[in-house]
Image (cartoon, rainbow, N blue to C red; front, side, top):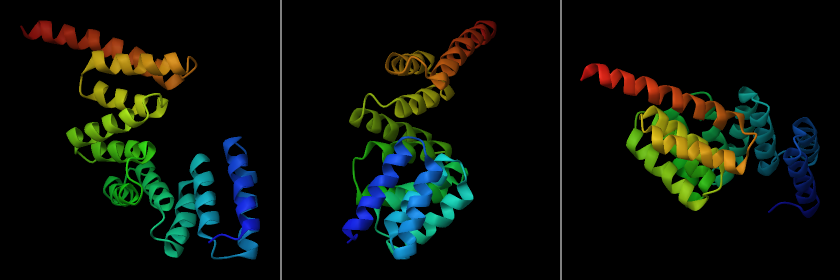
Length: 200
C-alpha cells in the first residue's frame, strides 16, 4: 500500500507526464525514492516517462526494478512489454504483455501492444485478431486504428487500411502518421493493381 503523501506525489508526476513534462515527472519520482527506495509505482512512472523520451535503456532499468518489487503489477508488465516491443524483441515483449493481459484482462492498450508484437513475431493472423479486439473495446483510439491500418496495409487489404486511416483523420485531422499512411495506401493500391494487370 502506497503512503498517502507518496500517492499525492505520484499523482503530481502523472499530471506532469500528461502535460509532456517528462523530466519534471522523473524528478518527482526520484524524490519519492529518496524517502522510499521500494516504491514500485515510482519506478513504473520513471520507466513510463523514459519510454516517452525514447530512452529505452533507462526505461528498462527502472521497470526491471519495479518488477523485482512487484512482479504482479499489470502496469509494470505492460510497460516492460512495451519497452521490448520498441526494441523489436517480440518474444520477450509478448511474454510480459500476455502476463499483463492475464492480470488486467480486456484493456485496450495492453491488447494493442500485444497484437502489434504478435503480428511482428510472425503470428500475423492472431496479431490482427487481437488488434481488432482492442479496437472493439476502444473504437476511437487513434493509436489502435493506426496500428491496425498498418497491419492491413502490409496484408495488402488497401480498402480496409484506407478506412482505418480516414477514421484517425476524422478524430485527429493533424495526425501526420495517418496522413502519410493513407498516401502510402493510395500509392501501393495503384502499383499493386498495375502489377496484377500485367500478370493477366
